Every structure is written in structure tokens, then in C-alpha cells.
Image (tube, rainbow, N blue to C red; front, side):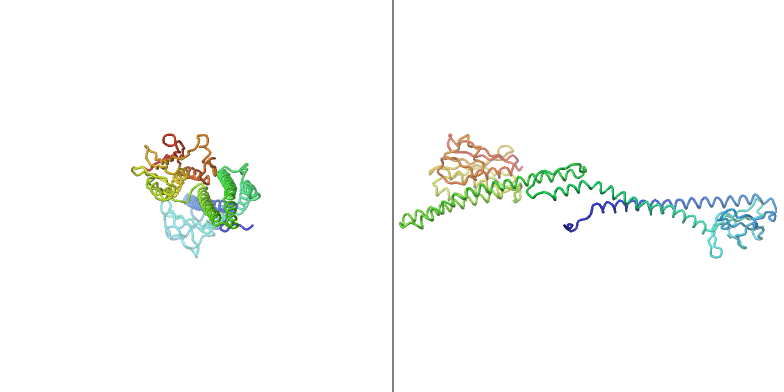
Length: 450
């Protein structure tokens, strides 16, 4: 299986980052240590030059010819890098070491100075004796100091060449060990059956990965619930659609076989009515299917419940007129809330449609939008047969219909209403209508736009 485009290896990233950081810090430390050590080295060697001059000045009580420097034993490998001169009156060379040149090491008479002699840089310290008769100069080649500093830098950097690969191996092993639970988790997910939406076994995973596993488990739970809802919805829908389709087929066969015009017309009227019922059922099913996801696709915005109710009443007025049902919207001020106007319109249409559908000829449907403190309410009341108290909890279930009613329906109207109410954090309650007749459905919204 190829790696996803744009992906990267966490192990390699950690290895390169850690080793790179260690190398940079080590080099920075080495550079700082080198310059600090070089400064201290120069101070130490300058001190030696000054001390050597002081020792020679202490010998000026003797005649310079009595101090043999030309035949001094070379006690150190770097002894020839140091030169000694003693000048009488600063002009006549009375004493010098083997390594010293014939000319003055430095034109300066007092203190430290740098000089260039035959292409070589020297560090020189000069001083007079107390009578200012003899000038003593002691010099040292910078080449020697540079060699010592280079050796010091080599000693600082050389361990890095051996330590960095060793650190790399240790980091690699420890990172691999730390990532082992992630690899096991990946194998656990990769080896799962597509239908297995059970929780992942967290095991001994790092604390940083626990939130990821917990979120994945919650996602699996939601997906499992959605799949179960879809499975139940599909089963219920297929069951509910089978009956009207079978009835349509039966009526079509009757019309096809009939030789009597009146009987054929009656069968065709039944076919049209069946088509209307099937279309209504399909529309309800599509609406309910769109409400199944956790969040609706419509934008949340401020909306006026009374304006929405007015629009729904106007839309369903022809249907109410055809059934000889009077529909009335109570007067009142705008009732504002925050929600999905499209879904709230669906909720109102279903409530009013149900009320009209189950109202007898000559009956009435009352719609009211009101504000009660910090809550907004919608109420739709009819004078139909109503719903017995022991069945009011059941009517919100999908496809459930009260037995004994002669009006056709899908059993989805109140189910859609309850689902939209849930999406808006609202509650739906059913009670008897006015004077104990009919049904009153109240939707109470807990949060109201101020």
C-alpha cells in the first residue's frame, strides 16, 4: 500500500529533529568553548611571556655575556617557537636565544605588541630594567598558538563524530519503541472488518494519543448509530411503500379488466388517489431522510415564527378549503428565535397539514405563535378525533398511526416535527384541544433571540 501523498515519517522526523538539534547545540557549545579557551590560552601564554621577561630582567645585575642563552637545552618541543633578546640602550643586541632573529622583535619598548618578522606573526612582550639600560623582549610565534588552538578544537569536535551516530542509534531505537503502540493501533484498524464499528482497544498507548482513540471510538458510535438508523429507515420505508404500490397495481388491473365505464372511472380515481398518497409518503420519507444527520445543512439565522406560520397557513389554505376546514392564525406581535427557517417551515406545514387532514368537514384549525418570557411557542389545535392519552407517546415514532382513523397518512408527520424540534433544542407536547375535543400540539423553544 502506497503512502498517502504529502505524508511523512514521524520516526524520521523525530530522528532528524533530535539529532539536528543535538548537533547544532553541540557545535554552538564547541564554538563558544573554542573561543573562550583561545582567549584563556592567549592570556596564559601572555602571562608566561611577561614572567619570562621579569626573570631575565632579574638577571641584569650580571653582565649579559655571562648569561648563556645560545646553548640552552631545548627542554620542550615548542621551545624553538620562543625567542629572547636583550638590547643595551635598545640598540645593541647583547643577548639572544638561538631562535631569535638579529633585528628587534618589536619596535615597541613597553608591553605587549604584535610583530611580523620574515612573514611570521609574533606575540612580543617588552620591558626595560630599572636603570633603563637594558631592553628585554620575549616573543612567541602565533603559529604555535594556532596549533594549540587547532588541537583544542579537534578535541572538542572529534567526540561528535563518534557520539552522533551512537546518539542516532539510541534515538532511533527509543522512537521506534515509543511508536510501537501507534503501529499496533494502525494494524488494529487496518485489520478490521468494514462492518466492525466497535470501540478500539486503546491498550498501553501514549497519553497524547488517548484523545485520538477516544474521538475515533465516539465517531464509530455515531457512524454505527447512523447506519442503524438508515437500515431501520430503509426497512420501514420499503414496508410502507409496498402497500400503496400494491394497491395501485390492483386498481390499475381493475381498470384494465373492467368493461363498465363507471367501474373503470372509479378504479382510475382510486389510482390517482393512490398516487397522491404515494407521492405524499415519498415526500415525507425524503424530508425525514434529510433530517437524519446530526446537523442540518441549512444555515442558522434569526427568524420570525409568526411570519413562518403565516406563510404555512397561506400555502395550505387551498387544501383546507377543499376539505371545508377553516384555518385561522391568531393575531400577535412577531416572535423571533434563532434556527433554520427552512426546517421550521417544514415543521409548521406538517403540523397544520395533520390538523387539516384529521379535522372533520366544517371543523377549524387554530395556529398561534407567542412569546412566554424567554421562550417562544408554536401551537396548532384542531377539532378532530384527537389521540388517546395512552397513545400520545407512540405517535412520534416513524410510521405509527392511530387505529380507527379513516384518513390516510404516512405516520411520519409528527416524527418529522419531533426531529426538527430536537435539532432546535425544542420540546413537543400533545394535549387535548379546546373543550376536550381534538388535539393540541405545542412546540416550545427554550432559547429565544433577544
